[in-house]
Length: 321
Image (cartoon, rainbow, N blue to C red; front, side, top):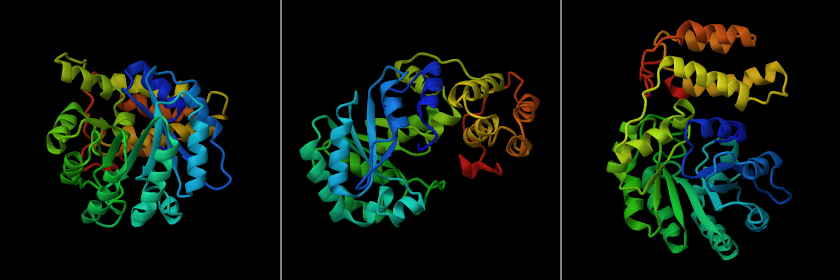
């Protein structure tokens, strides 16, 4: 997740139990691009001790091949091509999810990358640009190439992060593709993880927004699959997590205003639903300084009440999650 799951966030997740595999923020690739230093630093200083995929976004075939070559000099497990980012500016440039409107160009990109990538080559995609019934054409193309895994987000680009999720198309991908298919979308708890695996037949799960809200999720899922029991986090645990985000995920050398803005961005994934009235979200959003923001957190997050892993659907800010 761009400008969210960066090195600072990886450092926090490492304390709670990291995933089995990390994916970098995307390297923006164009004719005169160079791999961004802060993302290279995340690869080089990976605190989680697990393999890393270097994620590329762009549509310039020679530039993608060149960048993949540079990144293969780093300690990565493979190259991941982003065909899923729904940001309008990205799609306007025929990158990310925008490439789903040009299946023939995806074919060219994958052919060129597969010929030049000696490590794993994976793809992250959505189930179409406008409609999920477009996904069959994309699947035809993915089947032509020797991919090591495909992650499928269960929404179209147009649907952004709407509540709808087309898990049936992930099941179709899992049936048709020869490589492992990883399911993505609406995975915020062990219960959701079990339901998505059952619905899709996927070989694994990719978790983004759900991991920002619930950093315990990777440990919880591993424990559930092995039959172990994970401690249930409380609101006090959430308050301590917010402290870690501020002191670890936010650059301590940055001005307070910049750190506060970064923390507010992360809180937008965490706080909705914790207070059905919406007061907690409103107060943290409007906080002018660190003391004011943490005072709001202290007013709501100091009990041993269990942390509700699933955001309330009637929360005024559920759309942010």
